[in-house]
Every structure is written in structure tokens, then in C-alpha cells.
Picture 1 (cartoon, rainbow, N blue to C red):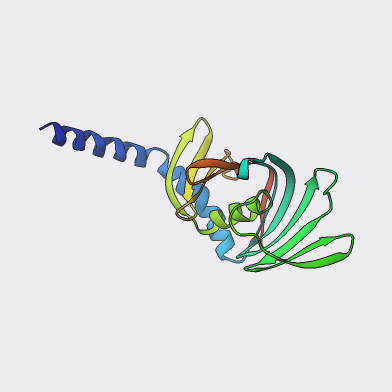
Picture 2 (cartoon, one colour; picture 1 turned 135 degrees about the horizontal axis):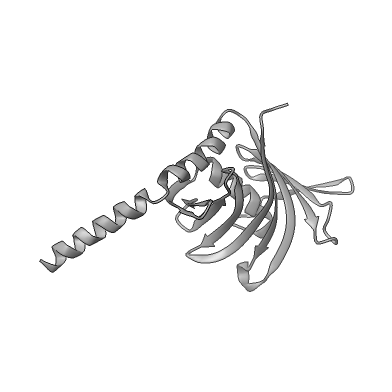
Length: 185
């Protein structure tokens, strides 16, 4: 009897959580995913902080692209401002003051790959849960077995922040300053 009651309570809580903000989460993702599926390009500028590997790092970055091809530029710190990277799949290029170097794309999440990872998650990661807090909608996405991201959408249904977790622990936080989608040139 006790197990049946617990199962009933668990089922009710699961349904309540699933209903909590689900339409808002679907709405927030649908607009971005539809535009990217039609060949649009997303652009994001954000302050990215990370504690990966026990080291704290903070950057202001801009990133543009879609479909696995991205251009990334470091805006801050001043010592790295102007460094840019382009990559698609396994191939990458690092550029500074006209010097271009071929380089491998780092595996896993790094502070410098957080924004491309965010754009890829928005494009196709599996939605796990969504809910509302005031006039914001939060959507939790599973990128893979270890990497997850919770994206906060503002009233305009554009991302305002994202928090990455790696194996359940916070790995990077992105405070989004600008986010836009453009439909080709």
C-alpha cells in the first residue's frame, strides 16, 4: 500500500513538473531551432566564467555561426583581445594580427568553446525540463551523457544566460549581453 501511494505521489509530481512551463520552454527553443534549421546564423556576445580543471577563467567573447561552423573572438581580457578562432568539426584556425595558425579543436568543454557549445545545444540538444521563474523561462538541455546546459530565456524568448554542468558539477556560466539570429546575407 505504501509503495502504491509513493508511486502515485511520484507520478503526480512528475506530471506537475512536466506541465510546469513546458509550453514556454518549447516556444523558446522552437523559434531558435526553426531559424537555424532554415540556415540562419546565430550570434552571441557573453561574459564566460569557468572553473574547469580547478582554475578560474573569465572572458568576454563573441561567437557567430551555425551547423558546426563557428567564428569566435576574444573581446576581454585586454591581453587577448583581437584573438579569433574559426572552426568546423575537427579543424580549426587561430588568428591574431594577420597571423593564421592551424590548430586542433579542443575536446570537451573549455571556456573558449562554451559559446559554440551553447549554440549547438540550442540547435539540437534534448530538452529535459523547462519551468518559469517570474518572466523568465529556464530550459534544461542534455548535450550528451556528461554535459548539460540550463538556458535562461528573457521575456523576448532570447537567451540571457546559460550554465553548463559537466558530470553534474558547474563547469561554466555565460552571462549573455547580446543574442541575435540573422537570415543569410
